Image (tube, rainbow, N blue to C red; front, top):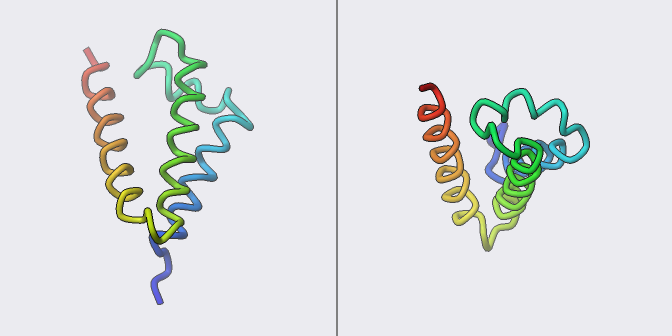
Length: 86
């Protein structure tokens, strides 16, 4: 049995997304360089996205879609990080 299955990873992604709403200040410092305008709104958007992706990964019928969404979301965040550097 795998130590970390896709479903468990989905739970962790959802929990991280929910944390954006529970403690938004903890995410603003990380989010601000990538999204300098409306940072607080972006914290909430990113949290909601992570909750949705994590939920999709936890459910067998949508697991593959959830993994694809996580890859796309990670790529999008990486793209924004690279382009925010200057």
